[in-house]
Amino acid sequence: MRNYLLPVIGLWTVCQSSVAVERQTGVDEQSQLPYWQISDQGMSLRLVQRLPAQTRGFFLARGFTAEQAERIAQSCVFQTVFKNVSHDTASPSPLSYDLRDWVVTYAGQPQGMKVREDWAKEWQAEKVSKPVQLAFEWSLYPTQQEYKPGDYNWGMSIFNLMPDAEFDLKIVWRQFGETRHETIEKMKCAADIELPPAEPF
Image 1: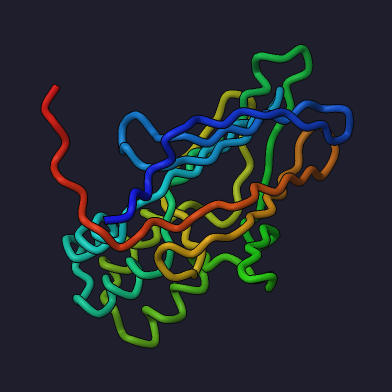
Image 2 (image 1 turned 135 degrees about the vertical axis):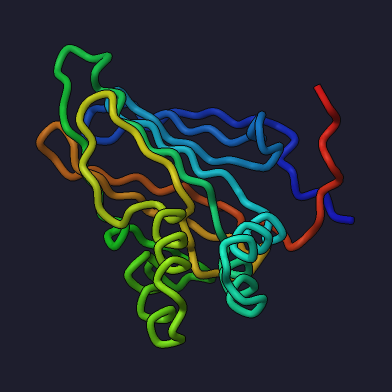
């Protein structure tokens, strides 16, 4: 079996608009799956792989058919945690974003993410029940949001790629009176494999 975990944590710093941005990759302590993270003085964003098996089981348990759960599971899902950490600075600032501004580049071709509104059209066309649609909506990371200093949120983000695909992600957000963007290169969708149960603590 191919080793899909990232054995070494990477750390580097770049500057944009005179602001240092720290980037990290490694293995998330809780999930034991690869993550990619960027942060600066005002924000922190972590994206953690989710195995298709995890996503498949999660949505089967919420009333989706096997075909529907498989469609979601095969679409490259990440757990997303986005924080406004500007409360620790001398000039706290709101943070806002719109996932429709983010750009996924795969095999040299740019595309958008698949957000709540895109999925809602599919579920409505397939006459998925309202409670099941609501469970899905609340599981996904919000398409748009504004965070006050100290606020944060988490949820699943869907990149609409096949398992094991490698891609670059351009992230766009607004804070401190400007629109900022950073690109995380060589992110990777989780492979469609099973992990053995974790050892008990």
